Length: 495
Image 1 (cartoon, helix red, strand yellow):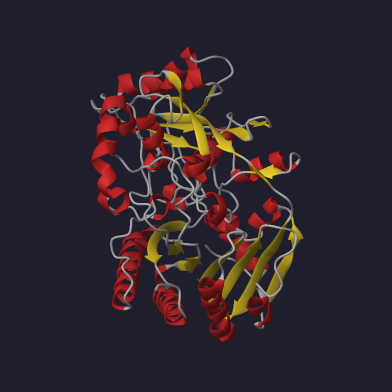
Image 2: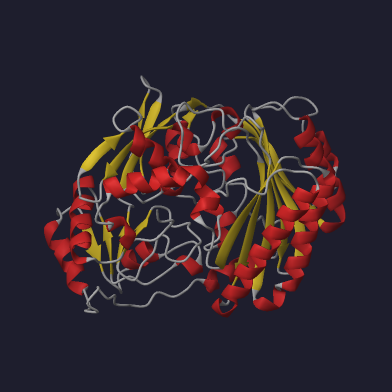
C-alpha cells in the first residue's frame, strides 16, 4: 500500500485524529423492535469466560474499532467469545432472533459493513493461541491474532508461516481470503498452506474441516470468507525461517524513471523464488514518492540481484539482515488508520517500463485530481510474482477460479477523510481500474477477465468477477451448510 519516507511527523500524527468516534446505536429486527435484549441473552447463556460489552467500555471501543473509518460502525453491544462452543451459542441466538452481527478478526476490512455492524459485534480477540507442532511441522493459531503475533511467536522455533506481507493484518482475512506474501513464490497463497479449520457452523455445531473430513467445505473456506460459519482456529504449515535480507528503499519523484527501470528489469530477469519485491507509487498530501520493499529469504542476497535498486539515488533506505517480522513491519501501514478507504485490483502478465509509466501517470493524475475531495493518500502498488505462484496447492480453492497461470498485480488504494466524497472516490477508483485494464489490453496483455482478489475488491465488485465458474458450486455448498441463511445476517461477499 503506502509508505511514508521523508514526511513530517506532524502529518503522521495528524492521521490519528481522523478516526471516526464511536457513539451508541440501536438496531432493528424484522419487526422494527429494538433488540438490546439479544445482547443480554447472549451474556446469560454463554460461559463465564466469554464477555459482552456495551458502549462506554474501553473494550467495546476496541471491539468496534476498524483500521478503516469507512468500515467502522457503532454496535448495540460487542461480544468476545472465549470458546468455540460459546460462538455456537451466540450464532444460534442471532439466527433465532434474526439479529444482524459482525465478525472481526483483525479489523482491516475496508468495505463498509464487511466486519462491522449496528447489531452484535463479535470480536475474536480471545482466540489468541499459537501452538507449534514440530512433529507435523504445523502451527494452530487463533483468529483473534494478527499475523505479526504469529511470526513473533514462532521465531523461537526458527520457523514461520505464509501470512500477511504487511503489518496489522488479522488471521481471518488471509486464512479465508487468500494471502499474497513475500513467501508466495515458494509456498503459494496463505490459505494454500491451511491444513485444517476449526469451524462453528451456522447451527452452532463445532467441527474440524480438512481436505479429507469435508472436501467441499475445505474448498469453500479457502476464499469463501464467512459464508459458512465462524472460524475460530486454523492449522497451517510451517517452514524453516532464518534471518532474511531486505527492507524499504524510497525514491523522490525525480528518480521515478530509474526506480521504474529497476522494477521492470527485476520482473524480466528474476527467477529465484526466494526473491520478492513490493513497490508502492504514492501521492501523499501532495508529496509523490515510490517505496519498494526488497526481500530475499536468506541472511544475504545473491550478488548483484538488487544492485539496480540500490544504485538509484534515494531519499531513504532501511536495508539490512533482519528477522522476518522486522521486514514485514518495515512498511508502516498502521499510520494510515482512521481514513476512509477503498481498494481495487488489476492483473498484469508483463511489467515493462511503459506499463510502469502508465501506473505512475495514474498515481499523479488521480492524486492531484482528488486532493480537493479530501484525498490524503493515493497509492498504486505493483506486486511482482512468478507465473508459478498458484502451483503450490494439492486441491482446488474458491479463489482463484483458475490456477492455470499466475499474474503480477496492481493494487490500488485510496484514503480520504470526508464521507461526503465516498461516491467520488468509488467512481474514481473504478474509472482508474478500467482505464488500466484497457491500457494493458491494448498492450496485448490478456488480463481483462482475470479474477479480482476479493480482499482488495471495491464494494461494487460482482461475485462473478471474483469467483468465476466456482460460483455455482459455492452457492450450493452455502445452501447446504446454512439453509436458514444465518450468515446472511453478517457482512461481506455473500453467496
